[in-house]
Length: 80
Image 1 (cartoon, rainbow, N blue to C red):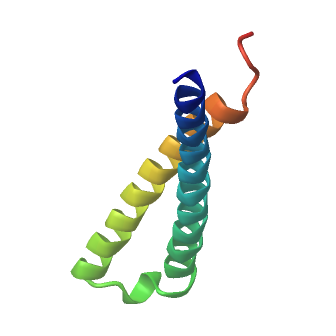
Image 2 (image 1 turned 135 degrees about the vertical axis):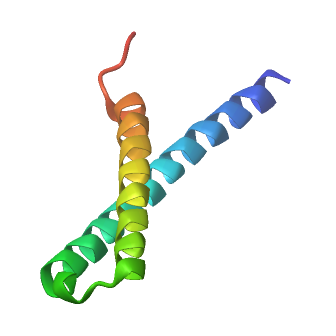
């Protein structure tokens, strides 16, 4: 019974790391998409394009913050 619990805990921690890396990669992709829009297409943005850009910025901030918090907990200094 104890080994099953330890395996489940190990799997859970691996899922946290997987989630961290997925969110970090998505945040980087969103950053480059936002930068591309701001650099090359800002003058041509319509009202809907501004809404799209705002949505991308909100997603970038959300993914970046969650990834940062998870990374700090997973890879930061341990409390032991």
